[in-house]
Length: 104
Image: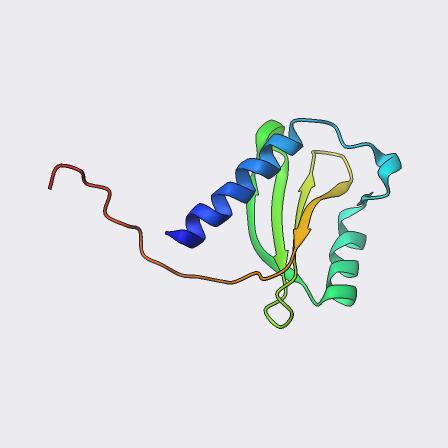
C-alpha cells in the first residue's frame, strides 16, 4: 500500500503539474527520445511506470535501482517531454492492497 500511495502521490502531483504549461525556456523539456537517452546515460534510469494524466498527457516515472535516483516526466500530445520532479531514495515495493473494509 505504501508504494501505491507513494506512486499515487507522485501521479497526482505530476497530473497537477501537467495541467499547467511548462515553459520550454526552462531547459527542462526536450523530445522524448532525447530525455529517455539522457536519463539512461547520466543517471542509469529506466522507465518504471507509465500512466495517462489530464488532457491525455503521458506521465512516466524513471528510476535507477542501483543509485535510487528517480525522475517524473510529462509528455503532452504533440509536445516535448518535460521533467517535473526528481529525487533520490527510490524503492520498488510490491505490497498487497490493504483491507479497507470498515464493516468488520
